Length: 414
Image (cartoon, rainbow, N blue to C red; front, side):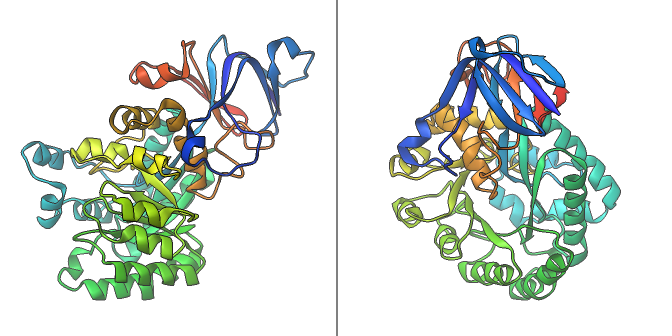
């Protein structure tokens, strides 16, 4: 299958050096090619060049970009999009002044989602999740990580992960699965957190590994959730079973989550709304990718991570949606990039790199995804004509994505 795209005003996100992530000042470099054509063959980027160099190329399909721009697909490295129902009642609670922590202490939040999920069949859960998957694909996402964590029992965590496996097998997006049994302490274990941690380590993790259902293991290491010691234990047990660490850290407090994540070789530490110089220094030289979730800070009315300080200190950052029913009910990565620019002063060029190559890195996928690079998987989208890359995030609600391609095939006309 050979796909030729011609009359591209600008190809955005070219990367020819083989780098796996952008860090520091390099994050603001965005390689582009104007007035271009692009060829994908057998689902991978095969060639590109200026339109005046386009000769006769045999292709099974020819697409006219008609002056639109071509971007590599977004790589959303942190979502919880497998869930049952919704939690708009808590939306009203927040409007009426309750904090995320207060809602959790009253038995809401994650525990409400766990109750709903327990009552929902695997087939229904799959159908609900697939609506969200189709939604994010139409908005330009081509790689996505999906977490469990609304089961909080062995049976229900496995149910979630089986749904994620079904999604992975039925869509052209690249999907990664994360076991997050330590998302909260289940209602049945209230007041017995140590016993719940034992359940995660001795029963849940071996069951997940036995079915090969997850790529990563994650823990919510934060105030009111899991301690540094509990986190280290769970991540170590996951490592023994072949699951690399990812971690929720420093959303609610300076929790020590960044430090334990780096010590355990986590691929990413995510959230980081509460972040100081000590945490920035710990991340220096580490393979761990700091991942920022501005959609959650926006929806919860929280402070935003210090992205500018992190980049200025030489770190790379990734951007992800945190798509979930309680704190970020949206998988719109373009909006995430706009929020990063508006509220965290990340430049549009930095936002593109954070949401593509660095997002792919945070899923262990940047050798194959995240940039327009010869040989990489041809996941990309084409926009309507627009004046600049900056305009894409400036006009954040204008419908600008026109066509979506995954593995070199068109999947959506928007």
